[in-house]
Figure 1 (cartoon, one colour):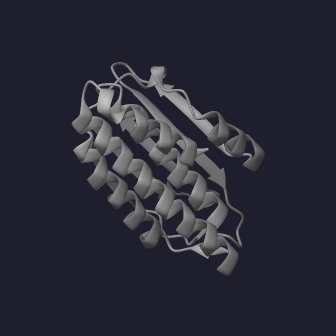
Figure 2 (cartoon, rainbow, N blue to C red):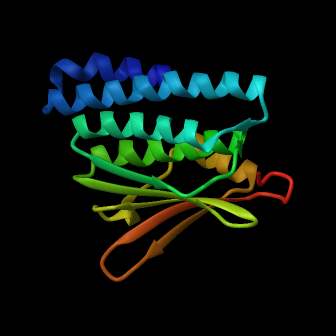
Amino acid sequence: SYIVRLNDMTNRLAEAPNRKNETARIALLLCYIKRRCNLFFSEKEAERLPTNELVVYFDELGELAALAGVQVHASNTCGAALPVRYATLLYDFLYDVIDWASTSHCAVLLAYMTDEKTSVTLSLLPSADALAYRMNPILCDAVKLAGVALTVKDMDDVTGLSLTFAIGGDDHA
């Protein structure tokens, strides 16, 4: 669990070779846990989450990622209010990649959320080799269970990651 991970990170902080970076990663994890709780309660209260609210969560992670040495530049053209379960998966995915980036000498992470008639995609383009990214096993199970597609696209000099889920005609509003 993330609470156990947080405990481990704080216990190892004194011996960390780069305490500033590790402290930033702890702050990033605390932010993630806080917003993840918000998403949990949002799902109990409503079926959908406005994309502008999710983007605020993305921006907050980006601000803390900068303290860990990762500049996150996010943009959004998705106008749909997302089912909360999918918004949560997108948030989990962004956090997971930022956490990986903070330990992988990845200075920049571009994030782009868009929607099509039948799908929503969060595409991430890290400045480090994304082929080395390994999704957290808990997130991987949740992605498989939800039927969400993770794509790793190897372009000439960069590798992109994207998470796409299908939305029905009724879900796209």
